[in-house]
Image 1 (cartoon, rainbow, N blue to C red):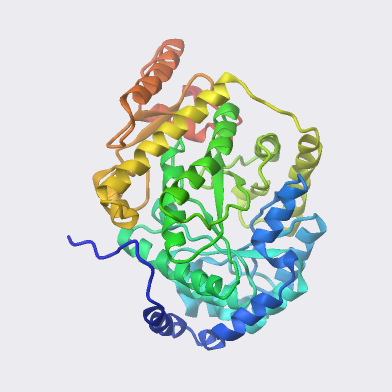
Image 2: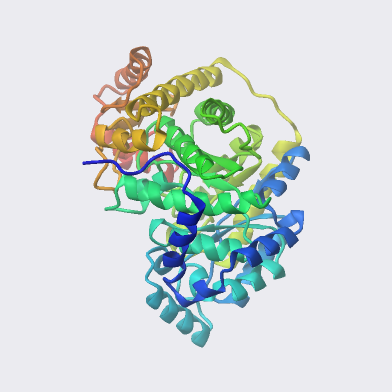
Length: 489
């Protein structure tokens, strides 16, 4: 099948024509007017501009929470965000509801009207398209902080249009996250095309001296395995966005529970971003900081004690790694839609760790961490170089071919176009290793390292690690353990 997508900036006239179709999807699209939106963005104070907030946090040697929040009723949303502001949270990811994410805007409208009528939220997020620009600006103006809306492929383009015109100054452009966790049937090419639209929209603003940041999530891990594919795909997302004119990218480091591996990834990822951005000529793209994150798709503990423990681990490693922001889930994540109270209690717990641990400026360095850095760098470099080779230097073409060939792959991906030939388990210290490499272009000496680590655990446990062991490891954290056992399977 012919690959039509290319790593090439969309011509402005073509882009403006494409916008007509996007804005026609719902009547609030008529509220988006680019000249007005650019002017509104330029009127915002630095405290509402995402990359400037992150840079200020870094300069001050602090770290802040980067939570999730979203509720359908405007007044409730303002109250929720203000409660986060009271905790000193200046970065506000703005979660859209499931109907909005799937572009089911009639259903979102009914849910919004029912929420307003009853005074109780019946949507699991903020329906930003249905609310439109005028209403959403009320939220931005009533609260402190820089807003960063969350969406998925189907509605991504229109959500971006409304969000930026409303004064939001960041948004993920992570098409591999859709493949990993949100979109079952979309092709890689379709996902890249959607990402190129949002990147070109951000580039339009950048051409007019308005810098909007895109945070990169990469192929979300659905199972226990090393983060090399996730990191490589984050960088691909950054490169795709940069070609369309994005000038600020924000890496996400997924913290899996092995402190040496997590700290190693925190330290090497920004260097790998910079290496490939510069290599492909995007020297003017900034990396204002990084965010540490609980792995989005890992099972979350159901009991409060374990939930607090998981939150505290993530916050501690993020503080020791001196990231600029950290995402932790709420203590009631496993039980349903979080309450305002659970947001507050969860974030107070994490903030305590940030303030106490980060202030001590502990420097942790050992051979285990350095080894993990070397392993991650070798794997990510091998994967990205192979993707570029497949595309004859075109990273977009290469990405499409790489998924087809299993050069980019993940266990248990929901997307039907993924090979799903990769599998991972933890080693004796809890670090994630490859049990099956599939077609990943991992260097032979690195493969041997993984085999040796797995063999050590197999010898200690007296069993062969397999698919079942991988699932045991996947569920372990939710049960208060790092390494799975037969007893908790």
